[in-house]
Image (tube, rainbow, N blue to C red; front, side):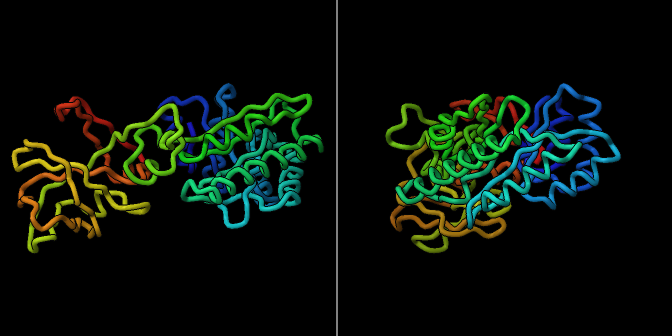
Length: 327
């Protein structure tokens, strides 16, 4: 399982997850000490995290020294304008050298994240992602030539929910003389997909894809008011729907009793307040207060943050279970 924070690592461990990849720098002293203690008690459970600077390595050393624990780390690399990660080969070499010299760290590979570099599937955007993956491969090769990897296996890990096809295409071909390579991608949005961001840019959403994903999350709200011919308001808002990567996408309409499903033709959510959605629709449409509007969402990651209990329904919209979230 891939985590982003020490608290998520602890949560995964409480559920019995044996192999956890903290795809981030580990800099919280209390988090470092807890993870070190856990790894000391569970030596057969794998843990990985990032370093991207000498300062980050020194912080880990200071907290790990009293514990005697050894943690596995990957050098994170990035490009200018990207997210965390060493921007240059020299910085990556310095971080790798510091990690390699530490008695408390074991350098296992090179990692990164491409999602901050592109927001669409244009040739320019995918070219940036491809060039970045080539940069990761180049740095891994240079660190390997300098003898920084001593484990016999070099881990390469890049890949959010959108461009993992490019990641696999480029990094899957990396060969390091005398060492096996292990490619780890960290794509979470396949669990639910969406009707917005990932429906546009995800690998399985592209025209040439042999396989497709179907969105599993829907948000239904009732019409509160129709104060103008082309304007209505629905009873959900920013507290209910993700809006950081696009507003909800109207898909279907049902009457007050939840019957007579029809397409939401010409419907657009134009804005959200905390508890209200602004709906633009054709003036001649018969939508009335109390009717239901079903929407797809954009960016499932922040949808899970908003709902502690998510109903699971069958094709007839009968509730058959539920999912509890912990983020």
